[in-house]
Length: 252
Image (tube, rainbow, N blue to C red; front, side, top):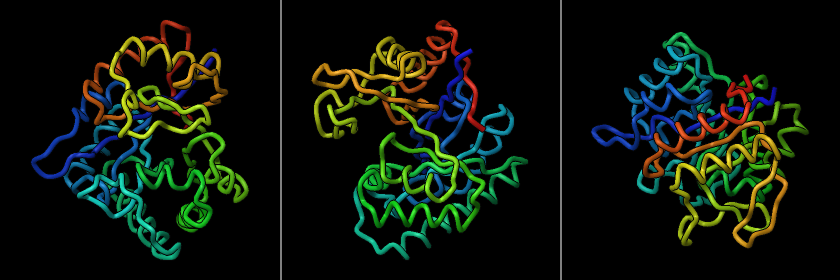
């Protein structure tokens, strides 16, 4: 049977502000990319996400990012590799503690937003993220974009790498995500998003915005929790995968 992981960003609210229904999302997915407080997430929100993840048997991943609450971590920061390593170690340590208190454990690392996009090609920052993970716990798996420098360097360092694809985002002909500022960059139709997820799982391909078919080998499929109607999208994706005979299970 074909097996694929379904991950979603979790704990991205802050204080009185809520981005998504984390509890409902965690009842559907197999892996949770938990914000670590730098791009989003406060201690209470993060702890609740860990507790709920453990209750549902969902793998806990650290969604580390730039220190940019105002920009939701979606603005590139030109920082030194050493400073980036320190910031990532701080975030990993915090989430590891919260996961342990909840009776769970940290299973993987997935960079967020602008950092995720930057390390697809930015050699120095990609190397810094690899250094942070290997220094902290080399047994952790890492998620990233297929063909990215980040995953290449992580594999060279002996880390378990997991390629992922985005069901709710459009792709350019070179296999990158269409900028969020462009029309059609974010997909909202549950049927379309589910169909794309099934194609990732069964064919390992995606149709880019110009109509070309790209190879997109993925062990995990992501839906963003801040996409409007995210819960409907995630439910449609899971239902579509199951209907296609694809088992939804965490890679960990």
